[in-house]
Image 1: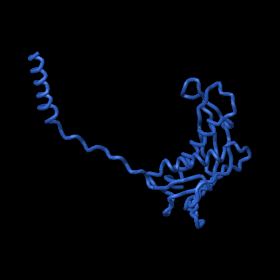
Image 2: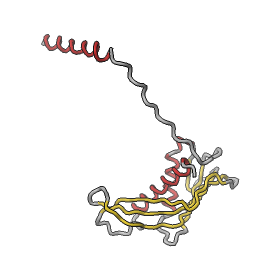
Image 3: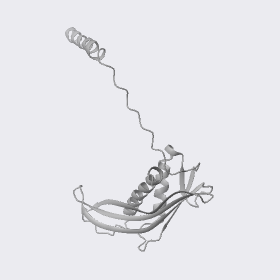
Image 4: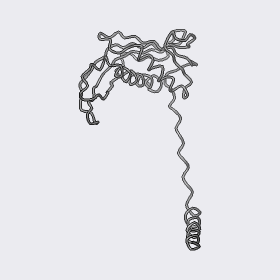
Length: 188
C-alpha cells in the first residue's frame, strides 16, 4: 500500500515539475465576435408590427403562420439588436411596420435526400417586404426577392405539402429566417 502511494506521489510530482510548470503559456482564448451590425437603418425603432398578405394566384403560404414566424424570428434576435416584433394589431404602439407580400409560390422538383427514406422537395417563394417608420419613411425594402426553400419529407409522403400544417410551419420558419436575416444583415 505504501509503495502505491509513493508511486502516485512521484507521478504527481513529475507531472507538476515537467508538465504543468514548464509548459509555454496557453494562447489567449478566442473571443466571440459581436453580431454583425444591422444594415437596415432602424433609427431608434424598438417595436415592429408585422403584417403579411398573400397575393399569389395559389395562396399556399398562410399569411398568419408566416407573420407569427417572422415575429418569433425577430424576437429571437432581440437581445442582439433591441428590436421586438408582434403581429400587427395585436399590440398597439409599434414604432415601425414590416409589410410582407407573398407574390408567387412554386413547388419545384424533388430529389433524393441525403437521409435514407426521405425525399427533398424544393420550393421557391417570391416576396416583397418593406419596413416603414410611423411617419411613413421607408427604412428597408426588398422588392420581388426570391427565397428558395428545401424540405425533407418521407419518400411515401403523398399528401400535398402545401396543405400539411407541419410543412406550412417549416416553410414559414425557413422563409422568416431568410427574410429577417436579409433585412438585418445583408446590404441590398
